[in-house]
Structures are given as C-alpha cells and as structure tokens.
Length: 111
Image (cartoon, rainbow, N blue to C red; front, top):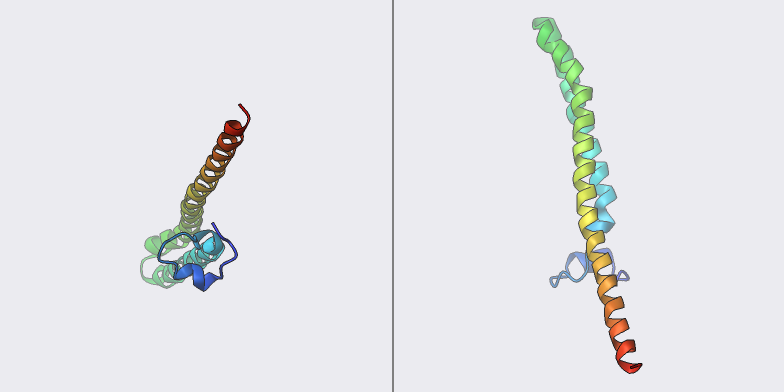
C-alpha cells in the first residue's frame, strides 16, 4: 500500500488499493462522540421539560441520558476498533506474505 497518496487521491482510488479508513477513524470516533453527546443533551433537556408534566418519565430520561451516552460511545469505540483490527490483520498478512516470498527467493538461490 502506498501511504504517500493524498487523502483525495485515496478517496477516488477506484481500485481500492489505497485505504482511507485508517486515516479518518479518529474523525469518525469524534463525530460519534459528538452525536452521542448531542442526543444525550437533547434527551436530558427533554427530561427536564417532561419533568413538569410527568415527573417519573422526566426523571427516567434525566437518569438514562448519561447512561445511554456512555453505552453509545462504548459501542462506537468497539465498532471502530473492530474495523481497525481488520485493517491490521490485512497489513500483518501482507507482511507475512512478503516475508514468505522473500524467504522463498533467497532459499531457492542457496540450496
């Protein structure tokens, strides 16, 4: 894999020889945390608003909002780590194959 290509060159690489996921994974995680935080904030505010008319539902929303935030962030992190694991498996397999080819060529030359 050639890591020297720019982001947009990798983005429009229709042969998929260049992977951009490993470059944007941090941005994807940050977006997941921001979206989860926004959803939790809306839920918390909704709980405060709901508290006046239905205290039990409002209290439940207030309590659940940080719990759901943590669960969503954990789910996003685990999902993105699984993606990175697949890419690392690919990289390690590529290195093992290259070493195997290298040892085959040197072994064939030295009987």
